[in-house]
Length: 461
Image (cartoon, rainbow, N blue to C red; front, side, top):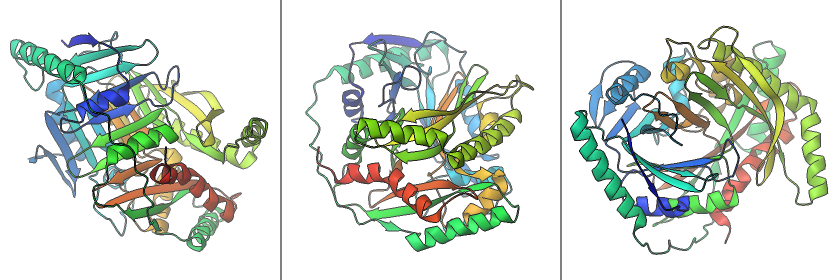
C-alpha cells in the first residue's frame, strides 16, 4: 500500500530548494525535456535509513551488515518490498544513491587501483519513504508516501499521512530567493598531462595490436580546491542551466555532494523489461545551425565512432544475456544521434527481458560497471584502465539512480559528474580508444566533455 497526494505544480528547482531544509536531499533531475527519457523528475529528503559499503564492510545507519556488498544491500531493502504500482509516475519509495566504479573490483576478478583518495564509498544509498514526482509532460506534482520504516499496516498509514502533511506544508511554504550564483575560477589539477594522455592512448593501441583488447576507455582526473563557503546546490543550479541533461542528479550525503549532468542511461528495469543506452561517439556542437547539422551528419558517418559504438553494443548484449531470458536481447536503435547543449552523441539502445528468478541487484551484478566506460573485452580493459590511470575512479563511471521498493531500477552512468567533499571538487573525463584513435584528438575529446562543467563554475548567468 502507498499513499499519495496531488499538490500544485512546482518547478523542480523550487521544490528542491524547499526540501533542502531537510537532510539528505536527493534530486533525480530530468533537466532536459524529452518525451520518455526526461519526463519525470523525482525528489526526496529526510531518509529513514543510510546504507554504505566501504573497505569490505556494509553498514546500515552505521551498524555492520554481513554478506557480499549487493547481498547486504538486498537484505536491507527486503523489509520494504512493495508490489508494483503501475499508475504512479515514479517509484513507490526508493533507495537513491550511487554505485562507485571501484565496486567492480568486488564483483569481478580485476586489479584494484593503486591509489585511492577515499572521497566516496563503493556503495551509498539513502532509503526514502516519501518522494515527490514532478511530471513535466502532464504538468502535475504528486507526493508519494509509504509509511516506512513502520511495518505494521496501521502504523504505516499514520506515518504516511503525517509525512504527506509535513512535505506538502514544506513545499507550499514561501521561500526566499536562492542566493545569486557567484562564479569561481578554480585551479584544476590533472593526473595526466596532454603528453601523458597521448602516451596512454598509444599504450592502449599497443594492447589492441597485441590482441589483448579491442578498445578501452581512458580518463583524466581533474581536482580543484573549493573556496570557503562554496554552495554546491547553487553550483548544481548553474550546471543544469548551462548543460541540461536527461539524467541530471544532485545528491546530498553527510560527507559528500554529487552534482551530475549525465546524458547516458546505464540500466532501467521496469517489471521485467531492461534497457541500457550506451554512448560512444562525441563531437562538439557548432553555434551555426547549418554547420552544426554538418557536424552531426559527419559524426553519424564516422567509421571510427560507429565501430566503437557497435563494439560496446556487442559487449552489452553479452552482459545482458547473462541475466536476461534467452533470445530476448535486442538492439532497437544502433548509432542514433542525440544532441545536448554543447555536444552531439552517438547512442544505441539495447533491451532485454530479465529472467524470472533475477532482480535488479542481479542485473547490477552481471553488468556493472557499464561497457561503454570500460572497454572490450571488459575485464581485461578494466585492468588496463587501472594500470594506466593509477588513481581509483571512485564515483566517475559508476552509476547514479534509484532502486525502487517495487523492484524497479533506473540509473545513469556517472559522467559529466562532479563530487565534492567541502574542500575539493573532482571531475573526470575520458573517451574510448580504438586502433583508429588519434592521440591528440582523443585528448581534445576529454576537454570537450569537461568544458561545459568547467564553464558552469566560471560563467556569470
